[in-house]
Amino acid sequence: MIELHGPEARQIVVLSGKGGTGKTSVTAAFSHLASLEKHTQAVLVDADVDASNLELLLGPTHIESHDFTGGQIAVIDPTTCAGCGICADVCRFDAINENDWYVVDTTACEGCATCMTQCPQEAIHMEPEMAGRWFRSDTYFGTLFHAALLPGAENSGKLVTLIRQQAVRFARREHRPLVIVDGPPGIGCPVIAAVSGVDLAVIVAEPTVSGVQDMQRVLETTRHFEIPAVVCINKAGIYPEGQEMIEDYCHAHRLPVVSRIPFDTVVVEAMVQAQPITMYQPESAVSATLRQAWEGALAALERAEASCGIA
Ligand code: SF4
Ligand code: SF4
Image (cartoon, rainbow, N blue to C red; front, side, top):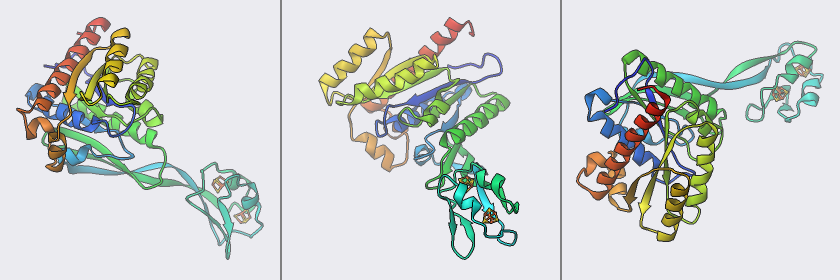
């Protein structure tokens, strides 16, 4: 059982080197298993803001909803514009077009404000650009912070940072001991935003031809930020050579393999039923290995705390 030592919740992030490895199913199972102990109920974060789908398995009810403004865009006031064309000439992104008058292409504008500073008529100002929304929701398994980026919107790293901060503040206020983050796939800016400052990373790795490299890439990120990590092999047994490579790598780098989840169609059935697998079929072999993964993650968290002198 996780207990609160001091005011801050511990944070676990679930990651994978690419999408489709079962990361969200693992996170949903962890959320369910945490909720079974009343002292451990976690605050949940869906940090995969470009393709959020944890909410599909947790059935959230929105409690709060907020705009997310990612950057800024230029706006031309046609009543002040003298039509000199300077703004179009100085824009390096070709984001200002001449139609009946000069207008900004909002999809091309990068918000650099060069046009605003160069306009002799002061006809241009910058406005916040709406990039999406973020939510605080109730679920059966704890409070969920999640978000939706508008199509084509950028700044997903900034949005991940924002919802993580909100989750940590909420956990502090509500005395919740744990924050569980469903991280974005890959190694880009949103992953860095999801990883920095967490206490443990659970890497979901698939035994495929590219699975070892995917796992190694994401481990380079966790190593860079000095985040302790454990590995959970999903679809164990589908490609023994690939699994052996993952096991060998983990052994050589002293990375605990906390679970080997077998391939089973029950995973898809649980998704169709919009339930964590551990709730949908608690007696299945997949659920048993997910409980192992959860216990292994908690044990690693305790070891990490002990080595830092927190506990
Ligand atoms: S620089 Fe200013 S005045 Fe000139 S076209 Fe652009 S908005 Fe109009
Ligand atoms: S803010 Fe920058 S990118 Fe946007 S229209 Fe002006 S000069 Fe172009």
